Length: 619
Image 1 (tube, helix red, strand yellow):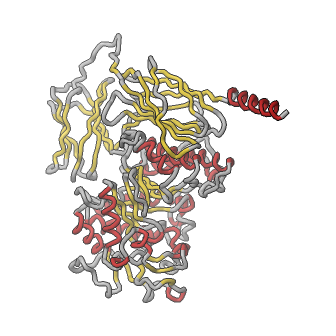
Image 2 (spheres, rainbow, N blue to C red):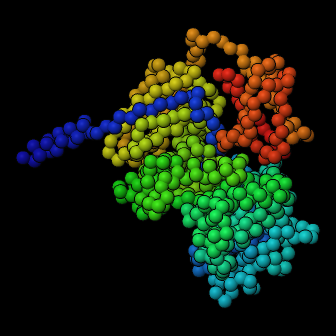
Image 3 (tube, one colour):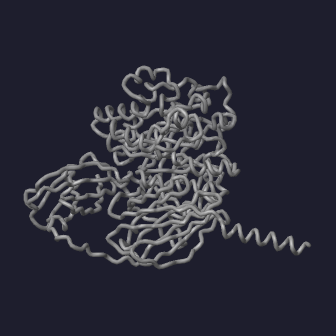
């Protein structure tokens, strides 16, 4: 009797396995459309993470609002008994004997970034005071100004010293910047600090740091402080990028957390983000140079349980869907934000606000976290976030919290999928699918080999296999595929089975709760048939940056007698300049005096021909 029972169970399991539900999905890839650059800085982390996969590191968080670089003291605020102590040098691994060395926390952090070839983003205090001592809890009676705090002033007005006076009860921002520049050089050098944030989550100061900034923040105060601190940074290092306003979330985006003076602006602007960008633009125009380079926000998921370790199926399924709030107009997340403000499409909104109020500003998300680092749902959500950041032009992103377990795997599927430091690439192309609920797809052309295509595709369904049909439109005919993947059973990335295919079409099955990195190789160029070859006159040209005249010279190798369109994009894919002209001779000169130092892409279009070239600009 027992044997019969076992046989029945076995047969039922076999039948269930054989009949496991499948979802049919069509994926379409076109390597001639949707072409753009993925910023290298979206694969970032926050302190104190030290990883082998990150490209950027942010020294930020609540502790930095009251950070004193002169003695490395900081205040925890409401996070931990309003304690002033040695937390920052401790968490960064500074030897206890060096806790009081001026600037040691900054140099330790940046040295680690340099060793990993990472972009360093430092937070500058802007709330008005910093911790003076390391004596523990600051009582209500010791609220600033008091002997427990030093005043923060942007400009010293007298000669700088590398060993600051710790008894003068003042912390000078320009002296801090002088220390960094004297130690590492300016931001345009190989070792310089590249960017600075205007403090941390200012709309919450009255809640997180009531003994440092006891008054509710107004828009007028934030703008005054932001403009002055940004100007101080630019005066000290014109090459450095300024990030702001580092808002914590949606309520701050709307009206700066119910700021008492929002009514002074609401007649002109729909949301505070719009006002901030426009006011920074106007201040920049007055100053004669750009004060804000990167619009910086934080974004944590609001649906219940997602930003936690909850790995129940209901929460896990929500966790894998909620990144769609960033881009998908058909998705309504289960939160007050989804209820009252759908479609949220956050990245579209922020990019549109930038385009309207301060064109040329980049976008960053310096804190985000979808929870469950030890669960496949957390890994899939992280893969999704990184793919979305790249696809929709985010310039800088740094995850808050754990960078281990499935989170590390999610980064590595982009940054080191084969264990040999090979990456997903930085030139994105168009990729679509007909099922946004169960899957996503992100595609790039290989940075070093145009005959190679990278596809990251994922299955968010708990139970069903996705039977994917992949159709590729390209000037290359791909012949073979290699696969790497991770799934619910392991945080390791496994080398899957390779396969061959023809006519740029193949079928591929994705197991439930899995992420695949498919690499198409051995692409051969396909000549276009039955089309008359057109000599566009722009197939060959050079791009040269003239630093003396602050202009880019486009030199054609033959005289161009027809109209051409010239477009310049930054590394995040944002169009910065467009012009259509008939060149006189073989040279076109383009004014770029207001561009920041960095990598850019110049595209020349005429008729059906488009040619792009990369160039480096050092102002």
